[in-house]
Length: 252
Image (cartoon, rainbow, N blue to C red; front, side, top):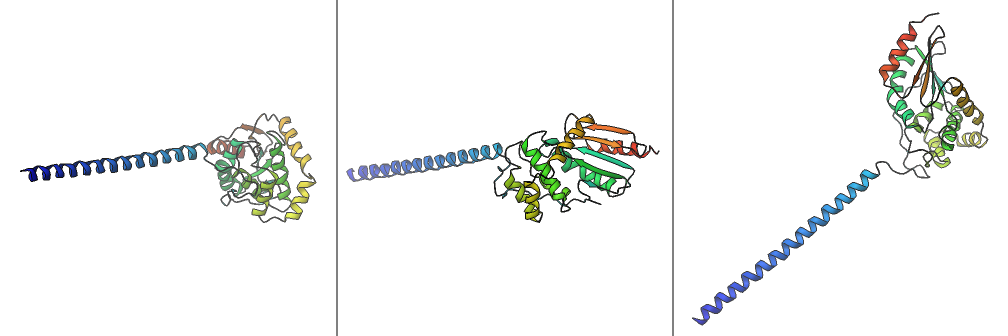
């Protein structure tokens, strides 16, 4: 009888020990899951807080723009010199709305109107409108134009915006952009160091202000008869299409 009691007690003791081990295992697993989920949430919050990489001095984070057509490129002008309509764009390379226009609307204007010989597009910078990095980028684009790549540099700048005067267009990154485009770096650096186009960039600003430009981007759509339409802001392509079609009807 005593042996049976001892056996039952031993079995009960084993069951309790097994349950204790199972509870400990469950607690460890739950704690691990909590730590894993917590870590994932922290990582997600950090990622959402920093959607784009900070610019680096060496240009490692530069994004190459998609290929764009630049028909009849001549420094800051593209399109047939005899095109019936001219669009003069005043723009700042740091301006986020200018960037949106350059990435979304401008390629459509080029495709449907510049490539077909109906529009000649002139890009004018806006000097130091937003700050020193705007002026540096403007000078750099003109220097790239000396090597036939103003518009290619224009594209690289707009696809690598990162805030205003926060280092996106530092001298180091500007040089990295020039190398990305395969420019002659000796000629490019000499042009930039001499500020060959600083006066031109600042004249762009003065000319824009004289034309009534109060913000970027702004556009003058000049019809064949010389009449002008003024468009302000990164408006949808349909608005520019409407303006161009109206201008094409105004023959001298």
